[in-house]
Image (tube, rainbow, N blue to C red; front, side, top):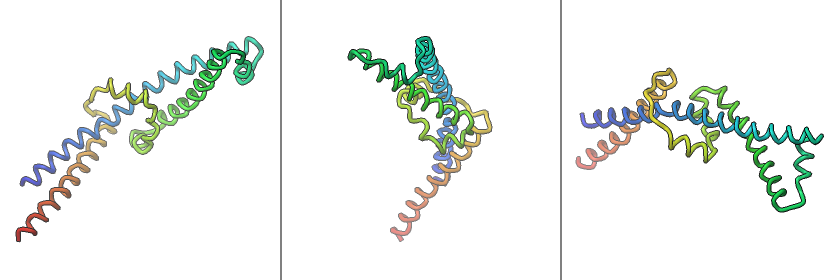
Length: 163
């Protein structure tokens, strides 16, 4: 009886926890979209300035020499452009994936700033989508089985040792 109660409690806790992943991934996706859009504006502005001078992006970057400040801005702009391309790729990938796909490609949630900011503002939500309910059910099942195996094995070992 105690084992079943513990397994049920473990299943409920795991289910509630797992049901939050779709909501967290949605909030991360929204932040990623906003950050990508902001970087896109910076890159487009740089490209427009380069075009106004008759330069390609690369030619404009190469022309940024002559002082420590300008060379630092060149390095910053190269980093901004690279980050924009990387975020654009991750955004397109995450937008086209299901919650299960997002779980399996959790390595795409590696932007430390976005992850931290998403977590700081994250508010748990009641899972009313099919994905949320599916994660809740999977979490419940996993938690129930895990607790049953852990405590069941411990209980079996204690009973066997006392016999």
